[in-house]
Image (tube, rainbow, N blue to C red; front, side, top):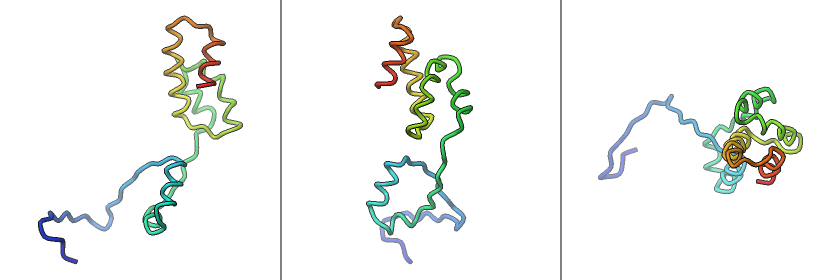
Length: 109
């Protein structure tokens, strides 16, 4: 097939691949777009790490957030949720609020 006029042709080998990530919500949008687009992707689900992995990520300033790891029993929350919560907690801790208030705010945020 010839390339359209006024375009630069870029050739890639047959072994060229692209790797991208998406969350569950993006995946649902992909399915809504079209089957033709969806079938061009190999979807590989990467699960969340075991609890030990979360505890490792939350060492230091995030240790107070480890109290909320039990929420994973109700929803499969990924590490990003806890890492963002740890950032928030570190910032709010500088305001001198109590630990119980801090856990309360993080939970409801």
